[in-house]
Length: 207
Image (cartoon, rainbow, N blue to C red; front, side, top):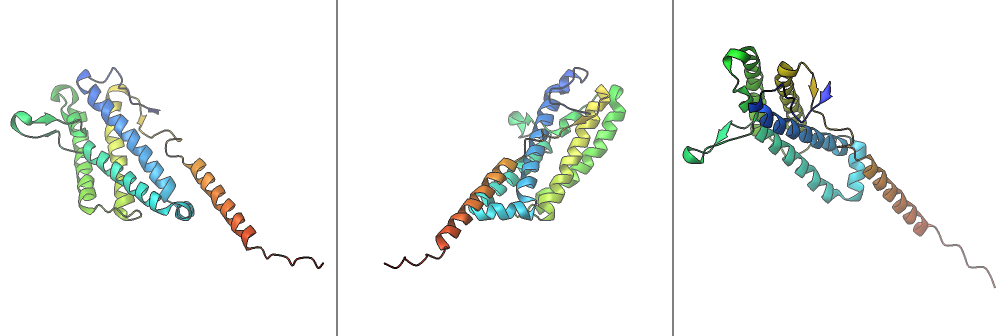
Protein backbone atom coordinates (compact mmCIF):
# COMPACT_ATOMS: atom_id res chain seq x y z
CA UNK A 1 0.00 0.00 0.00
CA UNK A 2 1.32 3.44 -0.94
CA UNK A 3 0.36 7.06 -0.33
CA UNK A 4 -0.32 8.79 -3.61
CA UNK A 5 -0.98 12.39 -4.63
CA UNK A 6 0.45 12.46 -8.15
CA UNK A 7 -1.80 10.28 -10.33
CA UNK A 8 -0.38 7.25 -12.09
CA UNK A 9 -0.17 7.54 -15.87
CA UNK A 10 -2.40 4.48 -16.15
CA UNK A 11 -5.29 6.62 -14.94
CA UNK A 12 -7.02 8.22 -17.95
CA UNK A 13 -5.67 11.71 -18.59
CA UNK A 14 -9.17 13.21 -18.36
CA UNK A 15 -9.37 12.29 -14.68
CA UNK A 16 -5.79 12.87 -13.49
CA UNK A 17 -6.19 16.50 -12.42
CA UNK A 18 -9.47 15.77 -10.62
CA UNK A 19 -8.08 12.69 -8.89
CA UNK A 20 -4.83 14.43 -7.89
CA UNK A 21 -6.74 17.37 -6.39
CA UNK A 22 -9.09 15.09 -4.42
CA UNK A 23 -6.28 12.83 -3.19
CA UNK A 24 -4.25 15.80 -1.98
CA UNK A 25 -7.27 17.40 -0.32
CA UNK A 26 -8.16 14.12 1.41
CA UNK A 27 -4.62 13.69 2.77
CA UNK A 28 -4.70 17.25 4.16
CA UNK A 29 -8.10 16.64 5.74
CA UNK A 30 -6.89 13.41 7.33
CA UNK A 31 -3.97 15.39 8.75
CA UNK A 32 -6.27 18.05 10.19
CA UNK A 33 -8.45 15.34 11.74
CA UNK A 34 -5.40 13.65 13.28
CA UNK A 35 -4.39 16.99 14.79
CA UNK A 36 -7.90 17.50 16.14
CA UNK A 37 -7.87 14.08 17.78
CA UNK A 38 -4.37 14.53 19.21
CA UNK A 39 -5.13 17.88 20.79
CA UNK A 40 -8.74 17.41 21.84
CA UNK A 41 -9.36 13.67 21.86
CA UNK A 42 -8.12 12.84 25.35
CA UNK A 43 -8.92 14.40 28.71
CA UNK A 44 -5.24 14.40 29.71
CA UNK A 45 -4.19 16.64 26.83
CA UNK A 46 -7.27 18.85 27.09
CA UNK A 47 -6.43 19.48 30.76
CA UNK A 48 -3.00 20.73 29.70
CA UNK A 49 -4.54 23.06 27.10
CA UNK A 50 -7.08 24.37 29.59
CA UNK A 51 -4.33 25.06 32.12
CA UNK A 52 -2.34 27.20 29.70
CA UNK A 53 -4.30 29.05 27.01
CA UNK A 54 -7.92 27.82 27.09
CA UNK A 55 -9.47 30.59 24.97
CA UNK A 56 -6.84 30.17 22.24
CA UNK A 57 -7.27 26.40 22.02
CA UNK A 58 -11.07 26.59 22.01
CA UNK A 59 -10.79 28.86 18.99
CA UNK A 60 -8.21 26.56 17.38
CA UNK A 61 -10.51 23.57 17.91
CA UNK A 62 -13.40 25.33 16.20
CA UNK A 63 -11.18 26.40 13.30
CA UNK A 64 -10.01 22.82 12.81
CA UNK A 65 -13.56 21.48 12.82
CA UNK A 66 -14.70 24.20 10.39
CA UNK A 67 -11.78 23.47 8.06
CA UNK A 68 -12.43 19.72 8.08
CA UNK A 69 -16.17 20.07 7.47
CA UNK A 70 -15.65 22.62 4.69
CA UNK A 71 -13.12 20.35 2.97
CA UNK A 72 -15.46 17.35 3.17
CA UNK A 73 -18.31 19.46 1.87
CA UNK A 74 -16.32 20.59 -1.15
CA UNK A 75 -15.20 17.07 -2.02
CA UNK A 76 -18.78 15.79 -1.88
CA UNK A 77 -20.39 18.80 -3.56
CA UNK A 78 -22.35 18.70 -6.82
CA UNK A 79 -20.36 18.13 -10.01
CA UNK A 80 -21.13 21.63 -11.19
CA UNK A 81 -22.46 24.89 -9.79
CA UNK A 82 -24.06 28.02 -11.15
CA UNK A 83 -26.38 28.18 -14.12
CA UNK A 84 -26.34 29.15 -17.76
CA UNK A 85 -23.14 30.85 -18.85
CA UNK A 86 -21.95 31.03 -15.25
CA UNK A 87 -22.10 27.27 -14.78
CA UNK A 88 -18.72 25.75 -13.88
CA UNK A 89 -17.38 22.28 -13.19
CA UNK A 90 -16.29 21.51 -9.63
CA UNK A 91 -13.39 19.25 -8.62
CA UNK A 92 -15.56 16.80 -6.71
CA UNK A 93 -15.88 13.04 -6.33
CA UNK A 94 -18.92 13.04 -8.60
CA UNK A 95 -16.72 14.00 -11.56
CA UNK A 96 -14.97 10.63 -11.32
CA UNK A 97 -18.27 8.94 -12.19
CA UNK A 98 -18.09 10.33 -15.74
CA UNK A 99 -16.49 7.12 -16.98
CA UNK A 100 -17.06 5.62 -20.45
CA UNK A 101 -19.65 2.83 -20.15
CA UNK A 102 -17.94 0.60 -22.68
CA UNK A 103 -14.61 0.43 -20.84
CA UNK A 104 -15.44 1.05 -17.17
CA UNK A 105 -19.02 -0.07 -16.66
CA UNK A 106 -18.21 -2.27 -13.66
CA UNK A 107 -16.13 0.46 -11.99
CA UNK A 108 -18.81 3.06 -12.62
CA UNK A 109 -21.49 0.87 -11.03
CA UNK A 110 -19.30 0.16 -8.01
CA UNK A 111 -18.42 3.85 -7.55
CA UNK A 112 -22.05 4.85 -7.94
CA UNK A 113 -23.01 2.65 -4.98
CA UNK A 114 -20.22 4.14 -2.87
CA UNK A 115 -21.19 7.65 -4.00
CA UNK A 116 -24.76 7.08 -2.79
CA UNK A 117 -23.49 6.11 0.68
CA UNK A 118 -21.13 9.10 0.73
CA UNK A 119 -24.01 11.40 -0.17
CA UNK A 120 -26.11 10.11 2.73
CA UNK A 121 -23.30 10.57 5.24
CA UNK A 122 -22.45 14.04 3.88
CA UNK A 123 -26.10 15.06 4.22
CA UNK A 124 -26.17 13.80 7.82
CA UNK A 125 -23.07 15.90 8.48
CA UNK A 126 -24.71 19.01 7.05
CA UNK A 127 -27.95 18.51 8.98
CA UNK A 128 -26.46 17.44 12.29
CA UNK A 129 -23.35 19.58 12.44
CA UNK A 130 -22.32 20.77 15.86
CA UNK A 131 -19.39 22.98 16.75
CA UNK A 132 -19.00 21.25 20.10
CA UNK A 133 -16.22 18.67 20.01
CA UNK A 134 -17.05 15.24 21.36
CA UNK A 135 -20.54 14.87 19.91
CA UNK A 136 -21.41 12.13 17.43
CA UNK A 137 -21.42 14.65 14.60
CA UNK A 138 -17.98 16.01 15.35
CA UNK A 139 -16.26 12.67 15.50
CA UNK A 140 -18.41 9.80 14.28
CA UNK A 141 -19.71 11.29 11.04
CA UNK A 142 -16.47 13.04 10.12
CA UNK A 143 -14.49 9.83 10.61
CA UNK A 144 -17.05 7.78 8.67
CA UNK A 145 -17.04 10.21 5.76
CA UNK A 146 -13.24 10.26 5.62
CA UNK A 147 -13.22 6.46 5.44
CA UNK A 148 -15.89 6.39 2.73
CA UNK A 149 -14.08 8.94 0.56
CA UNK A 150 -10.79 7.06 1.01
CA UNK A 151 -12.48 3.84 -0.09
CA UNK A 152 -14.02 5.60 -3.11
CA UNK A 153 -10.71 7.02 -4.31
CA UNK A 154 -8.83 3.80 -3.63
CA UNK A 155 -11.39 1.84 -5.67
CA UNK A 156 -10.99 4.29 -8.55
CA UNK A 157 -7.17 4.18 -8.40
CA UNK A 158 -6.96 0.39 -7.99
CA UNK A 159 -9.06 -0.24 -11.10
CA UNK A 160 -6.38 1.34 -13.27
CA UNK A 161 -3.18 0.60 -11.32
CA UNK A 162 -3.89 -2.60 -9.31
CA UNK A 163 -2.20 -0.90 -6.35
CA UNK A 164 -3.85 -0.30 -2.99
CA UNK A 165 -3.55 3.37 -2.02
CA UNK A 166 -3.73 5.04 1.37
CA UNK A 167 -4.60 8.68 1.85
CA UNK A 168 -3.35 9.11 5.40
CA UNK A 169 -1.24 12.15 6.19
CA UNK A 170 2.35 11.61 7.41
CA UNK A 171 2.50 10.74 11.10
CA UNK A 172 4.24 14.03 11.85
CA UNK A 173 1.37 16.09 10.38
CA UNK A 174 -0.90 15.99 13.40
CA UNK A 175 1.82 15.35 15.97
CA UNK A 176 1.80 18.11 18.57
CA UNK A 177 3.71 16.14 21.19
CA UNK A 178 6.49 18.76 21.33
CA UNK A 179 3.88 21.45 21.99
CA UNK A 180 2.31 19.44 24.82
CA UNK A 181 5.76 18.74 26.32
CA UNK A 182 6.54 22.47 26.25
CA UNK A 183 3.20 23.35 27.86
CA UNK A 184 3.75 20.73 30.57
CA UNK A 185 7.18 22.25 31.25
CA UNK A 186 5.58 25.68 31.54
CA UNK A 187 3.00 24.33 33.99
CA UNK A 188 5.70 22.64 36.10
CA UNK A 189 7.79 25.82 36.14
CA UNK A 190 4.81 27.91 37.20
CA UNK A 191 3.92 25.48 39.98
CA UNK A 192 7.51 25.50 41.28
CA UNK A 193 7.55 29.29 41.21
CA UNK A 194 4.31 29.42 43.18
CA UNK A 195 5.75 26.92 45.65
CA UNK A 196 8.81 29.10 46.22
CA UNK A 197 6.63 32.15 46.81
CA UNK A 198 4.42 30.30 49.32
CA UNK A 199 7.32 28.93 51.40
CA UNK A 200 7.17 30.26 54.98
CA UNK A 201 9.74 32.89 55.73
CA UNK A 202 12.10 31.89 58.56
CA UNK A 203 12.53 34.03 61.68
CA UNK A 204 15.32 36.55 61.64
CA UNK A 205 18.30 35.47 63.74
CA UNK A 206 18.51 37.04 67.23
CA UNK A 207 21.04 39.85 67.66
